[in-house]
Length: 230
Image 1 (tube, rainbow, N blue to C red):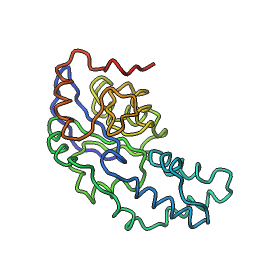
Image 2: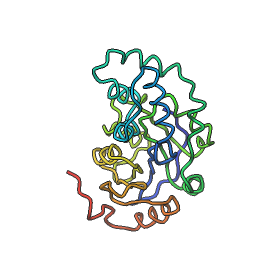
Image 3: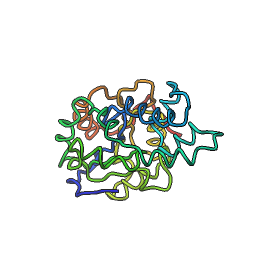
Image 4: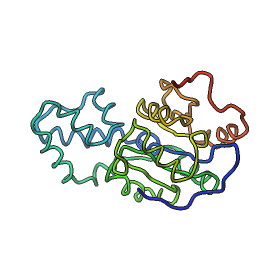
Protein backbone atom coordinates (compact mmCIF):
# COMPACT_ATOMS: atom_id res chain seq x y z
CA UNK A 1 0.00 0.00 0.00
CA UNK A 2 1.38 3.40 -0.96
CA UNK A 3 0.09 6.80 0.11
CA UNK A 4 0.62 10.56 -0.04
CA UNK A 5 -1.31 13.50 1.42
CA UNK A 6 -4.96 14.13 0.57
CA UNK A 7 -7.09 17.18 -0.26
CA UNK A 8 -9.33 19.80 1.33
CA UNK A 9 -12.53 18.48 2.92
CA UNK A 10 -15.92 19.74 1.72
CA UNK A 11 -19.14 19.14 3.62
CA UNK A 12 -21.99 17.19 2.01
CA UNK A 13 -20.18 16.06 -1.11
CA UNK A 14 -18.03 13.37 -2.66
CA UNK A 15 -14.61 13.66 -1.06
CA UNK A 16 -12.75 10.68 -2.54
CA UNK A 17 -12.63 9.24 -6.03
CA UNK A 18 -11.47 5.62 -6.10
CA UNK A 19 -10.38 3.99 -9.33
CA UNK A 20 -10.04 0.43 -10.50
CA UNK A 21 -6.92 -0.08 -12.61
CA UNK A 22 -7.38 -2.53 -15.48
CA UNK A 23 -9.98 -1.32 -17.95
CA UNK A 24 -10.26 2.04 -16.20
CA UNK A 25 -6.82 3.63 -15.87
CA UNK A 26 -5.31 1.49 -18.60
CA UNK A 27 -6.52 -0.61 -21.49
CA UNK A 28 -4.90 -3.88 -20.50
CA UNK A 29 -7.07 -6.56 -22.07
CA UNK A 30 -4.52 -7.44 -24.78
CA UNK A 31 -1.68 -7.37 -22.24
CA UNK A 32 -3.57 -9.67 -19.87
CA UNK A 33 -4.30 -12.05 -22.73
CA UNK A 34 -0.60 -12.13 -23.68
CA UNK A 35 0.43 -12.70 -20.04
CA UNK A 36 -1.85 -15.65 -19.40
CA UNK A 37 -1.41 -17.14 -22.87
CA UNK A 38 2.34 -17.20 -22.29
CA UNK A 39 1.78 -19.21 -19.13
CA UNK A 40 -0.71 -21.54 -20.82
CA UNK A 41 1.64 -22.11 -23.76
CA UNK A 42 4.49 -22.99 -21.41
CA UNK A 43 2.34 -25.79 -20.01
CA UNK A 44 1.01 -26.85 -23.44
CA UNK A 45 -2.52 -25.66 -22.70
CA UNK A 46 -4.95 -24.03 -25.13
CA UNK A 47 -5.04 -20.21 -25.37
CA UNK A 48 -7.64 -18.25 -23.44
CA UNK A 49 -11.21 -18.27 -24.59
CA UNK A 50 -13.11 -14.97 -24.47
CA UNK A 51 -14.94 -16.15 -21.35
CA UNK A 52 -11.68 -17.01 -19.64
CA UNK A 53 -10.16 -13.66 -20.60
CA UNK A 54 -13.14 -11.81 -19.16
CA UNK A 55 -12.67 -13.68 -15.88
CA UNK A 56 -8.92 -13.19 -15.49
CA UNK A 57 -9.18 -9.54 -16.52
CA UNK A 58 -10.74 -8.64 -13.16
CA UNK A 59 -9.33 -11.26 -10.79
CA UNK A 60 -6.03 -11.59 -8.93
CA UNK A 61 -3.28 -13.61 -10.58
CA UNK A 62 -3.70 -16.27 -7.89
CA UNK A 63 -7.43 -16.66 -8.51
CA UNK A 64 -6.88 -16.57 -12.27
CA UNK A 65 -4.27 -19.32 -12.26
CA UNK A 66 -6.42 -21.45 -9.94
CA UNK A 67 -9.28 -21.00 -12.43
CA UNK A 68 -7.16 -21.80 -15.50
CA UNK A 69 -5.43 -24.77 -13.86
CA UNK A 70 -8.49 -26.17 -12.11
CA UNK A 71 -7.95 -29.90 -11.65
CA UNK A 72 -4.39 -29.62 -13.00
CA UNK A 73 -1.65 -30.74 -10.63
CA UNK A 74 0.77 -28.29 -12.26
CA UNK A 75 -0.85 -25.27 -10.60
CA UNK A 76 2.07 -24.81 -8.13
CA UNK A 77 4.48 -24.91 -11.08
CA UNK A 78 2.42 -22.29 -12.90
CA UNK A 79 2.50 -20.04 -9.84
CA UNK A 80 6.29 -20.35 -9.71
CA UNK A 81 6.61 -19.78 -13.45
CA UNK A 82 4.73 -16.46 -13.54
CA UNK A 83 7.11 -15.03 -10.94
CA UNK A 84 10.01 -15.59 -13.34
CA UNK A 85 8.36 -13.94 -16.36
CA UNK A 86 9.70 -10.81 -18.03
CA UNK A 87 6.92 -8.20 -17.90
CA UNK A 88 8.74 -5.79 -20.21
CA UNK A 89 7.19 -6.87 -23.53
CA UNK A 90 3.77 -7.29 -21.93
CA UNK A 91 3.83 -3.88 -20.25
CA UNK A 92 4.52 -2.27 -23.62
CA UNK A 93 1.04 -3.41 -24.66
CA UNK A 94 -0.62 -1.27 -21.97
CA UNK A 95 -2.14 2.04 -23.01
CA UNK A 96 -3.65 4.83 -20.92
CA UNK A 97 -7.36 5.44 -21.33
CA UNK A 98 -8.17 8.59 -23.36
CA UNK A 99 -8.37 11.78 -21.31
CA UNK A 100 -7.18 10.10 -18.11
CA UNK A 101 -4.19 12.33 -17.36
CA UNK A 102 -6.14 15.55 -17.93
CA UNK A 103 -8.85 14.24 -15.63
CA UNK A 104 -6.36 13.30 -12.90
CA UNK A 105 -4.77 16.73 -13.14
CA UNK A 106 -8.19 18.32 -12.64
CA UNK A 107 -8.93 16.05 -9.67
CA UNK A 108 -5.55 16.62 -8.01
CA UNK A 109 -5.86 18.86 -4.97
CA UNK A 110 -9.64 18.99 -5.25
CA UNK A 111 -10.49 15.41 -4.32
CA UNK A 112 -8.77 12.63 -2.48
CA UNK A 113 -7.81 9.97 -5.01
CA UNK A 114 -7.07 6.29 -4.59
CA UNK A 115 -6.79 3.01 -6.47
CA UNK A 116 -8.39 -0.28 -5.41
CA UNK A 117 -7.12 -3.05 -7.66
CA UNK A 118 -6.71 -6.80 -7.78
CA UNK A 119 -3.27 -6.34 -9.30
CA UNK A 120 -0.34 -7.51 -7.20
CA UNK A 121 3.37 -6.79 -7.74
CA UNK A 122 2.95 -5.04 -11.11
CA UNK A 123 1.02 -2.02 -9.87
CA UNK A 124 4.00 0.09 -8.85
CA UNK A 125 5.77 -0.42 -12.15
CA UNK A 126 2.64 0.48 -14.09
CA UNK A 127 2.24 3.77 -12.22
CA UNK A 128 5.90 4.65 -12.66
CA UNK A 129 5.87 3.85 -16.35
CA UNK A 130 3.06 6.31 -17.03
CA UNK A 131 4.08 8.85 -14.39
CA UNK A 132 0.82 8.48 -12.46
CA UNK A 133 2.15 8.10 -8.89
CA UNK A 134 1.78 11.82 -8.08
CA UNK A 135 -1.94 11.77 -8.86
CA UNK A 136 -2.95 9.24 -6.20
CA UNK A 137 -3.01 9.67 -2.44
CA UNK A 138 -3.32 5.94 -1.79
CA UNK A 139 -2.91 2.71 -3.76
CA UNK A 140 -4.35 -0.54 -2.40
CA UNK A 141 -3.56 -3.77 -4.25
CA UNK A 142 -4.67 -7.30 -3.46
CA UNK A 143 -1.39 -7.73 -1.56
CA UNK A 144 -2.53 -5.08 0.94
CA UNK A 145 -5.71 -6.87 1.99
CA UNK A 146 -6.70 -10.30 3.23
CA UNK A 147 -9.70 -10.42 0.91
CA UNK A 148 -9.43 -9.15 -2.69
CA UNK A 149 -12.31 -7.67 -4.66
CA UNK A 150 -15.25 -8.24 -4.81
CA UNK A 151 -14.82 -8.24 -1.03
CA UNK A 152 -15.15 -4.60 0.11
CA UNK A 153 -11.99 -4.64 2.24
CA UNK A 154 -9.92 -2.55 -0.19
CA UNK A 155 -12.59 0.17 -0.33
CA UNK A 156 -13.04 0.04 3.42
CA UNK A 157 -9.30 0.40 3.90
CA UNK A 158 -9.29 3.52 1.73
CA UNK A 159 -12.28 5.05 3.53
CA UNK A 160 -10.60 4.42 6.88
CA UNK A 161 -7.34 5.97 5.69
CA UNK A 162 -9.12 9.15 4.62
CA UNK A 163 -11.48 9.21 7.61
CA UNK A 164 -14.57 9.13 5.37
CA UNK A 165 -17.87 7.29 5.39
CA UNK A 166 -19.21 5.40 2.39
CA UNK A 167 -21.44 8.27 1.23
CA UNK A 168 -18.39 10.47 0.75
CA UNK A 169 -16.69 8.31 -1.87
CA UNK A 170 -17.31 6.92 -5.32
CA UNK A 171 -15.73 3.97 -7.09
CA UNK A 172 -15.06 3.89 -10.84
CA UNK A 173 -14.92 0.41 -12.35
CA UNK A 174 -15.63 -1.50 -15.52
CA UNK A 175 -16.54 -5.03 -14.45
CA UNK A 176 -19.10 -7.07 -12.53
CA UNK A 177 -16.43 -7.52 -9.85
CA UNK A 178 -16.23 -3.74 -9.46
CA UNK A 179 -20.00 -3.44 -9.37
CA UNK A 180 -20.20 -5.97 -6.55
CA UNK A 181 -17.29 -4.39 -4.70
CA UNK A 182 -18.95 -0.97 -4.70
CA UNK A 183 -22.29 -2.44 -3.67
CA UNK A 184 -20.82 -4.35 -0.75
CA UNK A 185 -18.84 -1.30 0.38
CA UNK A 186 -21.89 0.96 0.08
CA UNK A 187 -20.17 3.55 -2.08
CA UNK A 188 -21.56 5.22 -5.17
CA UNK A 189 -20.60 3.23 -8.27
CA UNK A 190 -19.65 4.83 -11.58
CA UNK A 191 -19.38 2.34 -14.44
CA UNK A 192 -16.71 3.16 -17.00
CA UNK A 193 -17.52 2.25 -20.61
CA UNK A 194 -19.71 -0.70 -19.70
CA UNK A 195 -23.41 -0.08 -20.17
CA UNK A 196 -24.28 -3.59 -19.03
CA UNK A 197 -23.39 -2.87 -15.42
CA UNK A 198 -25.92 -1.77 -12.81
CA UNK A 199 -24.46 1.54 -11.68
CA UNK A 200 -25.42 4.83 -10.10
CA UNK A 201 -23.90 6.57 -13.10
CA UNK A 202 -22.24 5.61 -16.37
CA UNK A 203 -19.13 7.29 -17.76
CA UNK A 204 -18.14 7.06 -21.41
CA UNK A 205 -15.24 9.52 -21.30
CA UNK A 206 -13.17 10.98 -18.47
CA UNK A 207 -14.05 14.49 -19.59
CA UNK A 208 -17.48 13.77 -18.05
CA UNK A 209 -16.18 13.00 -14.56
CA UNK A 210 -15.57 16.46 -13.06
CA UNK A 211 -18.99 17.81 -14.17
CA UNK A 212 -20.60 14.66 -12.72
CA UNK A 213 -18.84 15.10 -9.38
CA UNK A 214 -19.87 18.75 -9.27
CA UNK A 215 -23.50 17.79 -9.90
CA UNK A 216 -23.35 15.15 -7.20
CA UNK A 217 -22.00 17.69 -4.73
CA UNK A 218 -25.16 19.76 -5.17
CA UNK A 219 -27.60 16.86 -5.28
CA UNK A 220 -29.59 16.00 -2.11
CA UNK A 221 -29.92 12.37 -3.27
CA UNK A 222 -26.87 10.94 -4.95
CA UNK A 223 -28.18 7.41 -5.56
CA UNK A 224 -29.72 6.89 -8.99
CA UNK A 225 -33.24 5.48 -9.18
CA UNK A 226 -32.27 2.71 -11.62
CA UNK A 227 -29.85 1.08 -9.19
CA UNK A 228 -30.83 -0.59 -5.95
CA UNK A 229 -28.63 -2.26 -3.38
CA UNK A 230 -29.75 -4.89 -0.93
